[in-house]
Length: 571
Image 1 (cartoon, rainbow, N blue to C red):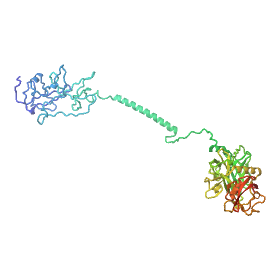
Image 2 (image 1 turned 60 degrees about the horizontal axis):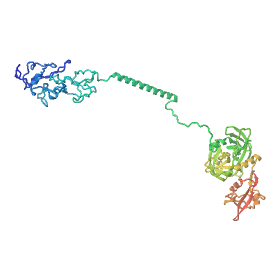
Image 3 (image 1 turned 120 degrees about the vertical axis):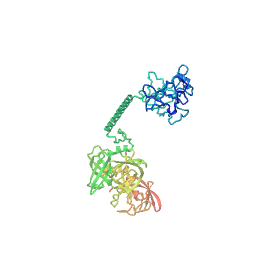
Image 4 (image 1 turned 180 degrees about the vertical axis):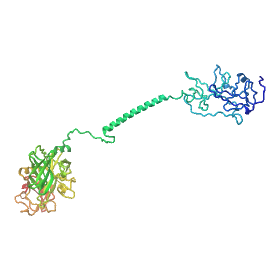
């Protein structure tokens, strides 16, 4: 063989042998060696077929350069695959340095490659995310070993597999490239995506999903069952139940509270229904003793007349017939009696002289026939002189009361009912109200309460009740004079003549005290009086036989006289 001498014409650049890729599955790709225009003819053992027709996909012969021939060539004459750069040389100890993943381009002219329309372009890489199992290296990218032998082109980079793990077989789809760092530290073996060892096992995940779904179903079933049981037990989820305090243990209220006073007094309070002579009415009364005597107002029983009906209803609902024992229009008091009734509860009587303005009081009655009605208030005033009645026009039904004033609500139907103090003792008999626009009168003209109620003091009521029970009539304290009710000046003036005789009754209490006609009485026991009605109220508030100090003005001169009250029949 004549090495170094030209054996024939040089091969043109357009007839250079093309790179051939062996697609065989049993061997990696072979490196293609082509001589440049400046290289000598190839030796006899190299095969060239420039004029042979090429078929698509046909394998071309591959020439392998021996190590000796590579060594004899200069660096410029060596092909890219034959030239072994210094960085790929063997290291001491037989170890091989890392090799490039593919062989250099045999036709490339640094840095951009040779001329010509058919200059091969570098392969296009399509990066994809690197899987955690490793990075795929296209087959055929194998570098020369440390002994100077050129291996197949594009052989996979040798990677030390883990213990008990087989080396990865090259994949036959070079178009699937993945990103990798050739200079980075290899943490895991480079494997092909989709390899059996890299895919997670579906079986374990499916089992976990099944167990989770089963647990969710069990929890949902338990919750649904609980909700269903709640709905069935409570009648539905839309039913509203509001919070409420527990039932009281029935402990009695303090005796001095309104509730305690009412509980103590209600059994002794009654409601009266009266009818007769074309009239009827409703009022209240309270039990005086165990014999069935009941105290009420005169104007309550007045409609019954001499032959009317009176029905008494007790707080527990029992009813009984009653009859009139006595009545007095001047005091507006009356006593009726029931018989054959057991369990009567008489109310204790207090002392109206002990009452002070501002003391708490409780009123019980049947306003507008609403029996057992309880109201409360205070004492607004004492010794309030009022007159009530007068419907007959002759003055025979006029009542003069030195009353206790209260703001406890009193309405039509409360008449005759008790006014109680803080110890549940009766201190007055509710008799009149001041109604708006109707003046002053018993029941107030049906106008209802405006906070001005009046009660007969129990001291006066007790004396009159005792007289009515014992004698059937009541006596009135008098001074034996006739008053001029038309006088408009301050005080009560004695008239000039009486209805049936002189204005000053001969031998009467006034005559004995030296009172004369036209005298003006201005004070009773130091209390000022402004008219004749107030003088009568002050006199009626005492008992017959009581001694009073009167201030009298005669012809402009003021003098004091002492009077011992006389007695007159209530008729």
